View 1: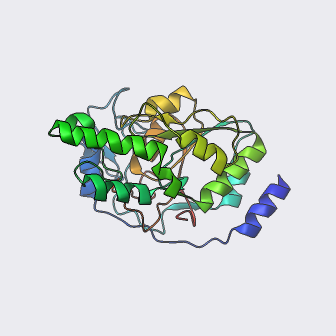
View 2: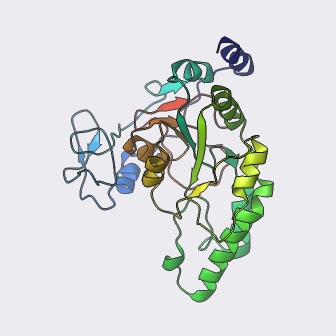
Length: 276
């Protein structure tokens, strides 16, 4: 372990970067799907009075909703570097889950091509567009074509993130069980598993789990996730709901992913220098 930590330290120079902060209203709207109105408590946490075991907000307050702290600033975020992360991991092996888009791979090129080719109404990175919501057969056909190409071809233009290389190297060295879960649309075939296996030297890895735009929570539970890395608010919220230690990987500033991201708002640890 000392060798691992020394190696991590030599490759990693910590600096604290201020994340983009958004108004409380944005997250308020994002969290109010299916649970009734949310309340702001005295500790600035948003909770749901109607929440129960099946509340989609998931969490650790009395009502079951994930804590959201209004006006989170860089000084109150729980920053963590790779060396500290390695020191605080439980005894191996554990089950570790990685998100794909903007967590382990910078996939903006494929989505930009899709938007230009099929239109923003059909393809928009991070947007929860579903086939059944599209207005006509032509749009639905374009939707299916794009996702088939994205999952089989377009990731040839995706770029591995440096932070993902370091994290996967760490967990491989410990003998941890590594899983990948994505909210991408599920298609009849996919080469994402093969690409990740080759890119990160993970021979024999389990197939990537595609949630088909649905919540990752049951998939996290399926693999018994103990540690989860993701860039979006949904990744963090659903990781916490599954009982996993949630680690925020910051999204690259040039990503065109529109999925909401408010680093640190759930009290999760945020990896320093993880945009790249």
